[in-house]
Image 1 (cartoon, one colour):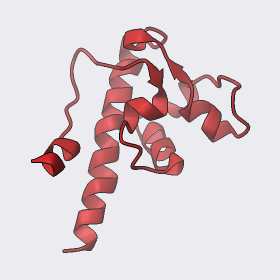
Image 2 (cartoon, rainbow, N blue to C red):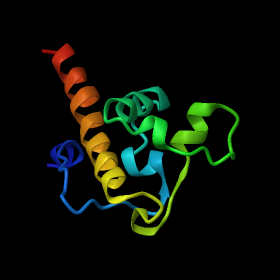
Image 3 (cartoon, rainbow, N blue to C red):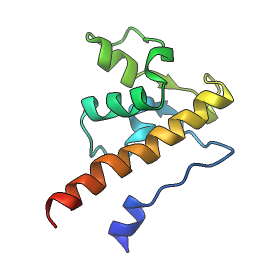
Length: 103
């Protein structure tokens, strides 16, 4: 049951984001590499719209660790939905591809 809960995701019409960073919203259990998160953000078309927060050295880290305000208030509704899609996509791409390799 624990494994199932970590691998089930939804794409809500009313997107839910948590205070923290983009990384913690997409990968709350810190299971994925920054490159994998970047790829998912690119696939949903959100990578170019994320503003750098200037806290880190590399462009990727600046974008992935950009802050998310309470309830995602610093993103538009469409951007919040895209972040939820990226959250679901990372599970689909990387979790299922790992399982397919072992079949």
